[in-house]
Length: 180
Figure 1: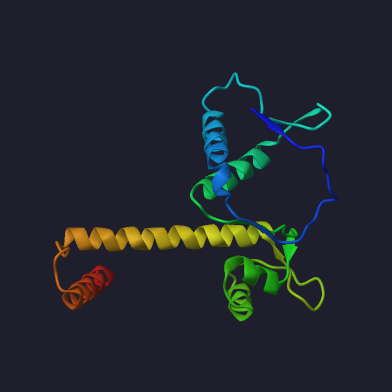
Figure 2: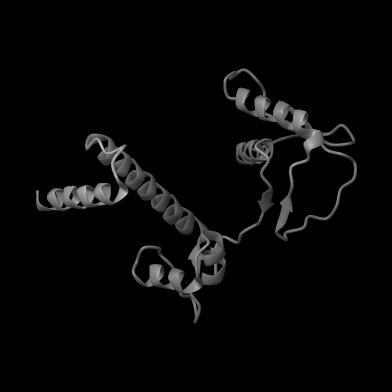
């Protein structure tokens, strides 16, 4: 796979930027998504590389290829993509922004031990990897809770039942499960 970069190069900018999907480029995005998805199927295929305007080729590391695939898939789905570089150690406000919660909620999570942190001085610092691990754990818990609810609803035959009755039955079922 080959990525070609124009000769116009600019100094890197580490500000948050949002990129909107371009309807005119939809076919190109579809081609990129298909190529990125197919790359893992053929082990003999050489690693993707970027071709600069002067013809110089640079192999792309796997994490960058993964990012490009996610960006292309999001844009193919008509979504905007925001690139927001992160330091490896975040403040509580940066962590809150990344998780989409308040800073005080982050502080409570830190103090309760749910997310490890360091306090090299007066301020708490959270390692990005610890924050991403926490986010992944929360997503797994939410997915499991949803799967449990769907399972409970199906097992109890409640698909066509009044919502208030479903709530009462599920509350009783959970209470029974807690007693066992």
